[in-house]
Length: 423
Image 1 (spheres, rainbow, N blue to C red):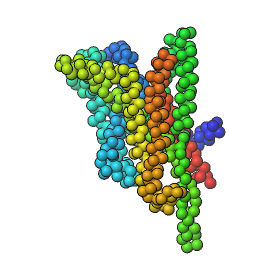
Image 2 (cartoon, one colour):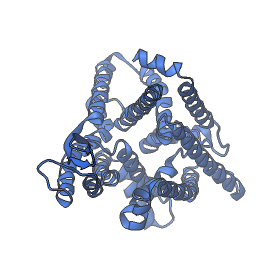
Image 3 (cartoon, rainbow, N blue to C red):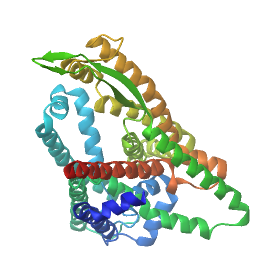
Image 4 (cartoon, helix red, strand yellow):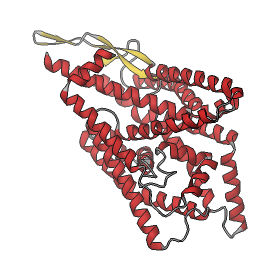
């Protein structure tokens, strides 16, 4: 590992890329501390500490939401736009063709539509957040012009983060959006550790030690599942062209247990936070029926058992959904057949697609169950240790570990490419 670090920092171009990405993440952290001065800071802090769901959402923005900063929405609207566009690929074949089959130009057009959809979503989400805080008495004595300015600033902050994420992705040191979420989570860890230490007593020591052991086991399990794969043997028919022989080799097709990575957790989190936040808007509605329904929904999503079960099922669904998007057995089978490849014992074409789909569904079940358990780990940990683990919960651990592994892979690929260039 140390030899690899030395190689990385000896390479001037790669070193500059890493410093550039680090500088952009620092810019994000600075933006997260620039507040929009229309809120009561003390009431805002108390409100987020009393609401577990909003506290978790604020963690993924690096505390920007809790400080009501320029980037209080983080990259949430962009992620929501991505979810909508991915869902549309399942409904409209034209969008799926543009995303999967039109090459780089089609993907760029797809990404452009995602960026355009981010803007109205950022406006809606910022208005919703301001409305929620006004209903809670946190925003007072502001007119329509101040609200419009705040919405414009928050929307601009989201677009700014989206731009930073794309700049980071262009350097091929990791996924920009994932690294921004990663930076937000890591930035909150020192404060969480400080709060745990400040409230630590002798009777809590066994629980905290148990929590640390559980966290270590989770990290090891996340790495194991992230690297686990099923290798499908593939052989290529021998073809003779003139005096040269092509093919006749055997290789394998890797099917990962967790092909979806951390995306299902992010998708599910965005979906799960929506009903509770919307219900909060109508709790004080003059209509008793609307207020009663809103109170019921709000209390329902505050119930840890209900929230945990629904969260698990949502993550399970999105794992299968996203896996079906990133890996299409039919396309893979067609490509294998075009290049003279086949799975031993399986006829090329439709039979191969059916076989790959069956194997993928089986191993994805294990990955979906694992991701679901990781998602509800904070509730399990809190029940077992009586220590609030939301700040370092399962979703946060999976995202942090997943981003680190992805970044290491991309750096390794750049080092390998440089080795070939030297040869």
